[in-house]
Length: 323
Image 1 (tube, rainbow, N blue to C red):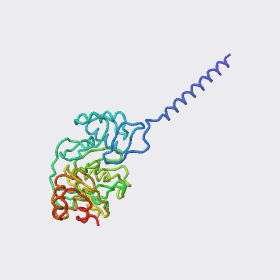
Image 2: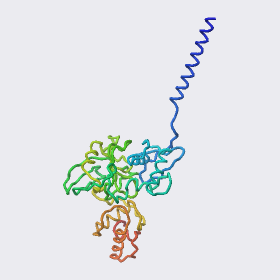
Image 3: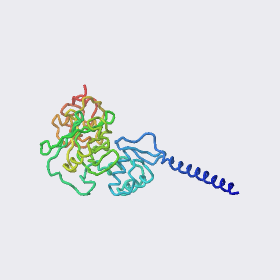
Image 4: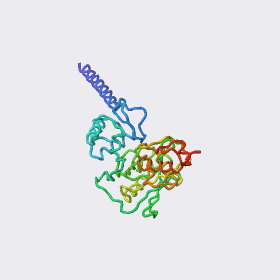
């Protein structure tokens, strides 16, 4: 009888242990939510929404980090979850935008302060004045960033720039946002630029081996300790000029028809060319506004072309931008 009881107890122990082991194994292999196969890493104001499988990638990291920085309570994990969806809807409502949890350009622009109308420091909420005449020049051909103050070179750093399929935006920009510790691949500092067709900035990295190469999705990567130094030296409102071999106009150029309210890299090239020919306006900033339209009209009058204020093949050819 004692042996039967002993064997029965042993049987229970084995069964219980096996069941517990299976349960633990089940816990170990339990998976998180299904993620979309292709991450969303592009910075050209991607449309984000709650989907199944869930959207994920660098663009969602940017979105979440910026929302958290503004005081929204959410996890920064690069996944567009229901939690992120709810915070986006709150932000849209707070900005007086459409009551929606979908992220479009209408959400991105106020979120990232792309327009640069108010040069506000994101982490202090206070306007900061540029005390000295500062200029950052980034040459994507040499992968170097140079800081000037009152035309004097202050610092020079080796950086990583955009890959050929996701190039860094040539043009004349301004720092419109300064932020701390976004995490993921953005390192310890973020200096956002007012590029009108996407989310671009100067930031640190968790891939220091990429510095000095063409490696990013268009942003400018720096070693963390160096971007921290640049962060301290510069203010919101600092001008940033991104060039290739010292020029904004590229070696190869594919024209497209342009008119007022257009934006993009081609607009930058047109503005740069007009400035070279002596037409005065603020910056080659990629925004086809009133001043750009007026400059195009003056050029067309000067060349005896139909005065439309728009860019077409005839005007491009007269400007010497195509053969």
